[in-house]
Image (cartoon, rainbow, N blue to C red):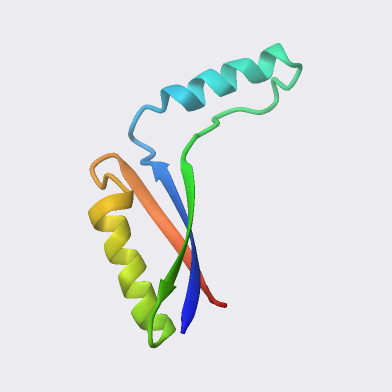
Length: 83
């Protein structure tokens, strides 16, 4: 079976996010000062072949831990759907 995974990788809350700070500051410049505490991360979409959703989930989790996220500075979450 084929599955699509939607992965969100974000900086951990205790880690400074210079991109998020820059975007937050820019919100004021465009008249959106009420938008605050912006955090900037990355979104990854991928397809995975697996026998079951549980197996696909294990493969995506392994990819996140070993390649897609820096676990010292980032956290991740994902959703999987069958194609």
